[in-house]
Length: 368
Ligand code: G6P
Image 1: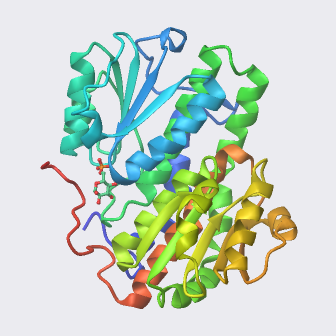
Image 2: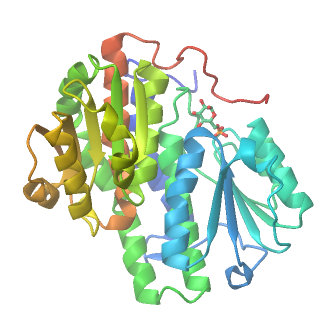
């Protein structure tokens, strides 16, 4: 058939490993590789300068891609972003300003709540962009501008490559917005685009960590609960990590902003609870180290996903460290997605669950 598992045991494994290639395809659609500038595939029917507020709406994993993008649009384009899950957005009758922009993210382009949210935004006179993987889908057809992800067919119910392709497209759109709004110089743009172009290579390096993660998964499979922590754009990635693990291994997992640890989840920490900390060495790294010390002081087991510098600076006991290559801060959520996905995948394999078709879940939720 057109789509098969090649030599992989599951579609999910194949799709995780396809990411350097499909993220590369998606990027090639949004940036000019030679000049290292953003090049939108279509001309947008509005000027980012005229947008006062951006609303981003999606469900599930796509909503976490949107959450990462919120940080990018706010930082790179100084554009205020409101992020919603579609099931809330469609009913809360958010006051929207005519002429503002709403972005809808969906792999399938058929999710009922996301489609209803799109229709609501249109009825309020907003410009609408959809970031979709299925170009013939209802959401793609009904939005004013449909921007594709080029992930190819995603079969595993748990989204992997669609997520990182969504991030790639959204990063390019955020850079375009930053340029149009005069918040980024040409040099900033080149630097950021250069960073994006490096992502496929960085992902290939991250995939080489698989043996270490497979071993770690045997340990994680014994747990009842797993906590994921991150700050900044790696906070949404922590949410995605927890979602991925619970979806396919059925181990209870929660994602938290590392700074919120003290406000609740710390009560759960004991020797039995692994805490996955997603923390590249960045301007908030030291803050995360103190959160890790709080976990270690209570006997919690820490799995730290970081880079070489982070591994040196993390002065914490009881640590498993997964060391990723150095990269610009903007692209960390794309590359750190790989160990996060691999950990969920291998844990599910150890548990013996139906990885590609987890119980009770559907690939596309077309009813409310
Ligand atoms: C379901 C799928 C998820 C997906 C979500 C949104 O819950 O199992 O993998 O993230 O729907 O789907 P969409 O097609 O709109 O991205």
